[in-house]
Each structure stands twice: as C-alpha cells, then as structure tokens.
Image 1 (cartoon, helix red, strand yellow):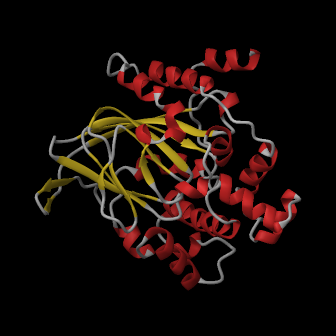
Image 2 (image 1 turned 90 degrees about the horizontal axis):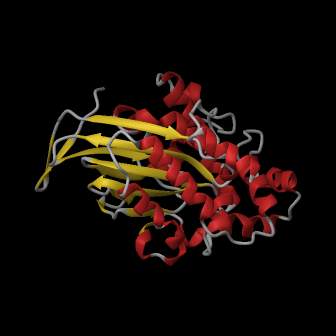
Length: 319
C-alpha cells in the first residue's frame, strides 16, 4: 500500500499527497551507549498544510527536538493527537503513540532504562504512558541545551556536525548516583533475551527477590516486570512480521504465545487495533525506521549504523 500524507482541512482529512522523508541514524560514543538508544534525525518535506501520520509501537522513553518547522503532533493511544512542543518527551510506553508530522527537521534520542536511572530524578512510573513539554519539566532541564544545539546548527546538509555536537552535549549532562546501576543494566539486558519469559526466571537471572525486582522496574523501567515481559514478546512478534515477511502473523508469533487469540489480545492492548488493521494501514515513517527502533528495544539485531565521528569515540576511550 502506498504511503499517504493527510492534509488537515477543518474536520476533514484530504489525501493523498506526495511527500519525502529522509532519516539518518548516528551511533553515540561508547560511554553513552548503555544509557541512550541511537540518535537520529528525520526531515519531512511535504506541503505546508499537510501532515504525515503514523503510529509508533510501545518503547522506552524518548526525547525529540525540533530544529525547524512544526513540532510533532502526538498522543498516547487512544487519545486524539494534539500539538506538542519543540522539546518534547514521551515516557516509557505500554500503548502506541500516534503522531503526525508536518514539514520539519526533528532529532530524536531514546533513553534506555539505565539512562533514566542515570539522568532523571523522578521514577519512570511517574512518566509512564505520558507525553510532556520537557522545556517546562525540571527533570529534563539538563537536556534542554540540545534544543539550542539543533536550532543553532548551520546549513541544511551539516547533520553529521550537529550529531557530533549533540554527542558532546550528552557527555556533559549531569549524572545521578545509581548504587544499583549494574542491576538496572543486567535487567535491561535480560529483557532482551527471549528465553526469559516469566518474572520468576527474570528474578532468578538477576539474583533478586521478586519485590525488589518490582521496585526496580517501576522506578527505572516504568512498568511492573510482568508487563515488560509481555511487551517484549509482543514486540518480538511485531518485529518478525514487519522486518521479515509481512505475510503471516502466525509465523511471526513468539514462542511464548499460547495461541493466535492470545497474541490478538496483546495487540489490541498495546496498539489499540487488530493485527489485520495494523498490517493494512500505511506506515510511511515507521517503515523507514523500523529496523533500528526494534533494535533499540532489544527485539531485533542491531543495524549497521555509522559512528557519529571517529574522533569522538577515540576521545571517549582515552578520557
């Protein structure tokens, strides 16, 4: 199905319209990788009164910075999408984010759970399934200089330099003391393992009491471990379908699903629609970023992205 661009015109959506999307990913320097997912930029080029619509699967927390043009419109399913702001943050999500993009350049950066523990002072559960104006949220104030970096970037073709500046900025962000950082990173890694299918197995893998694990997941991951494991098996199934065949949901199902009906219930819970409805809908933005977003969530192999700049990685390793 061809991608479509929806033109907002009063209460009526007029479509289709032509548009172009240019997405570029950058791997951050090694010191930052346990805490952040890939840095990316995307340019949307369409008519001034048009909006490209799509839906993002549940994921870790993400920050988005609008370099120029209109800030994204977005909402957690099932809310109606609404304008956001130039520096916007979505907390960790258990439901899909529906979004609309107008002509713009936007930078995105995900916070892994270890990154939340390292940089954000409030519990992740307090931001779960929420979208906030980060410019007015004290917990994200230390990341506000990144908006200045992107807005002061020179030239439309100098994104590599902008990415390098963002990387440098992240290296200076103030950090919190995290006594249990090793456990957070271990939990982050364990959730990527398809063999970890129950809270009991997860707790045993981490050497933690179940109640201690519950507290850690709520504080740094945003959700109870049972929901996190459900989300991972769902995302593994969605990843297989979208990245491999797009022909059969049954062939894509994770081994931890009892049957297809079990998967459909999860799909409705996480995405707000059925697998068939999702497969038949256009995904003009997600189709271009699916492999990396699924790699960020630990349910698909890591893609071959460039480093931001070689000298940054070298400087990290010597610092």
